Image 1 (cartoon, rainbow, N blue to C red):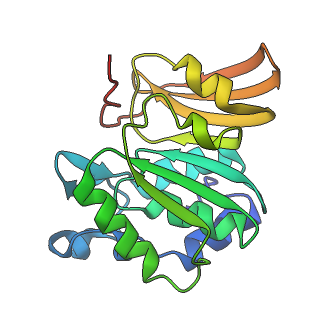
Image 2 (tube, rainbow, N blue to C red; image 1 turned 90 degrees about the vertical axis):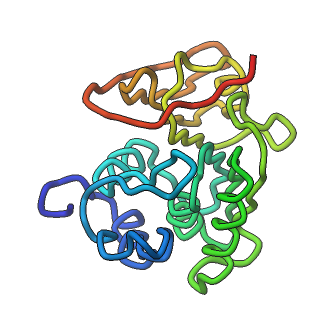
Length: 199
């Protein structure tokens, strides 16, 4: 990915070097863990292909000490990458609506010695409206495609914060420059499982 220019920043390069994707996939797909493709993690969900994750993290530009909301965390790979980047003084609030995947993610992250034990918190809950109780956040990462950007996520982002979220399979980058001032860019050509939104 580095030779293709997808990985550029040192913290993200180091995270990919230290957090192995194979530790976050079911046994039956381990042989394909190094392939640059999405893989099934069960329950109709996937772990995104490494290139897509690299693009999303480069846009998000997480840093040491950040508090990050990770929505649709699946098997925990994105939360682990972020946890490695933010370090001991950072916090990852990870939300996953499928209980079995929550348990799988907790196991995967709990076994990883390169992430501080208190850094990543994984909650079994609907994340489509974020998690107001722990807001505001420096960064918000959403790994499922929403029909629109939930207003709650904009509100839960700190001024100066950044969010990356797929909307109708276009990747959106949002930067909160003021309480009601948002800069936004979008990039086509991505495929994600849908973000299940409660009505």
